[in-house]
Length: 145
Image (cartoon, rainbow, N blue to C red; front, side):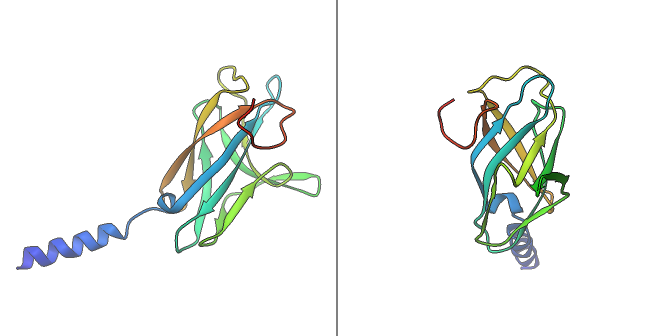
């Protein structure tokens, strides 16, 4: 009897450990690739489909030397350490606002390539999405190169 009670309690505890990444949907993900050794910018929509606020704390991509969360506003850009997205809400990462700043790529990328990006959340969970690489003149999402 004790073992069944202990097993049931453990199962309930583990069920509650689903990370923030589980309730997040990431779509319209693309990267504006700039020439030479300039950083690239990543844009996407992060939709929180869970019943609690999620906190995005970082992103990474093996194709790049590094990645940071940034926000552009009033002609300047600043690094942000975390971004909260309320339950049932979405946040659009777009030119002129929030974005991921990718340090120059390790190897050359071309428009049309796809780059996997991993998102990190405050609870330690992660979520991955493929980003479509677009040229410097790109202004938004489309499947075309």
